[in-house]
Length: 153
Image 1 (tube, rainbow, N blue to C red):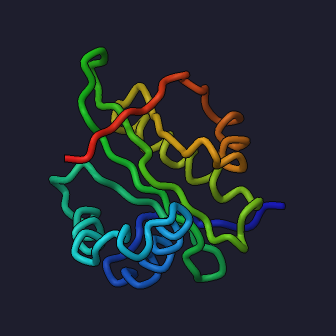
Image 2 (cartoon, rainbow, N blue to C red):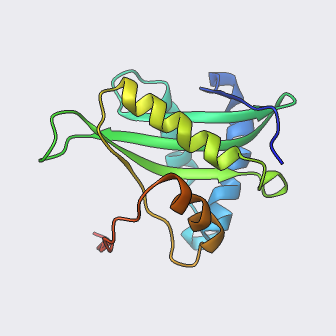
């Protein structure tokens, strides 16, 4: 079942509506309590979306006048391509709205944005336990086979 969606960039005065979704995303990945994203970083992230010099972007999904999904993406250079590469960093839909095509629509919107920016690739990562999301991802992209390593500094 799909719904009538509007995909767009949020307005600066929609911080609280976006923040509700951002909180949901962080709760999904258990970034709460001591692991929570500090409000200062959340606010900085929001402000970056409206800074033309920042490579960070956001698209929100709206239905019936309410924000119900978000996607954040970032452009960066790559050593093997001329144009920028697009990293889809965060994707979230309200839990009560899942299964209605919101995630797919947001991913496709990032693809469109990346094409317009001259990007040859969009990529992202997800947790290995996120089987529901991976069913969608297997339909809209190719699993690269790469494993992510990281070290907190």
